[in-house]
Image (cartoon, rainbow, N blue to C red; front, side):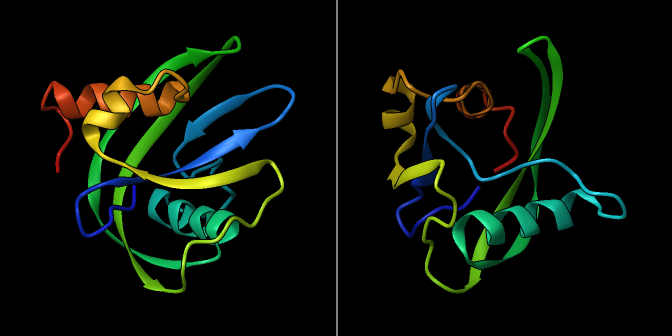
Length: 125
């Protein structure tokens, strides 16, 4: 999770035939990576920036498309670069306040879980 100077959360808008939703940068762990390395690599691949992991914020497992998804959320700061979409499956970037996120109906399941964790105070900000 990357925040701007006002505490707004950066999300990417996925626009594919299978999914149209706002989501956090992220992806699958590769062999030999730890979770923080995966987060850094995925942000670089998706947004073209280098980030520093500040801390682990929380985690959540849930069912999606008949699979168990295990997500770990990290707070990251931008070290170099400006967030720019690097993959064609995304068509927009936007920073959202937590209140805007609470009212947004087009969030990925993972992002819904993050927002719920923020409002129930279980997110370790």
